[in-house]
Image (cartoon, rainbow, N blue to C red; front, side, top):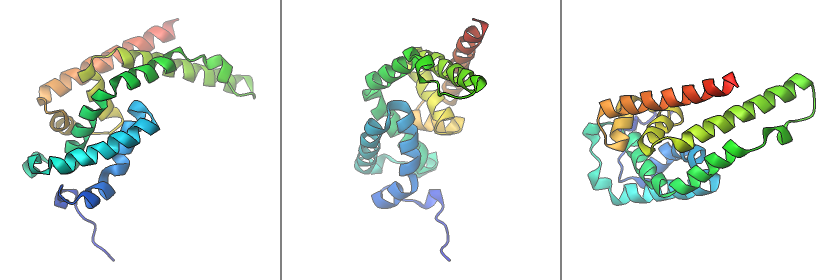
Length: 180
């Protein structure tokens, strides 16, 4: 029986080990941001940058994963237009044409869900970059506040306020849609 390796014991210079441990998490995060095809490129580039900048990693700042999320988020900024386009496309998608045949309630639920995704996508597309990055790292990557601060190299208070503002905007948009 092998002993599991603690995340803190992983050396960023060991590209294969770091990749094995964290690639799946990064791919899930990036895929939700820019789609599968671009996400694979971003993850690959993330590990290249991480290897090139391995001397900049400070183990005292915490685990390797938030550092990798920070690199990935910076790379995703380059793909921002793709992300915004995808979110706007979801926002404009016609949910009624995709509703599956079947019981009326099931079809109605699916259409409602697609409309909600559309409204949410529109709100995400309009969020300022920092608020969107913080929200996605929190909701998709499931990072803690301190990890987000480390990943984005911003103060903890900035993470908290950006997340609060992003949540408020999302809640307001979804409530506005429900009122219609």
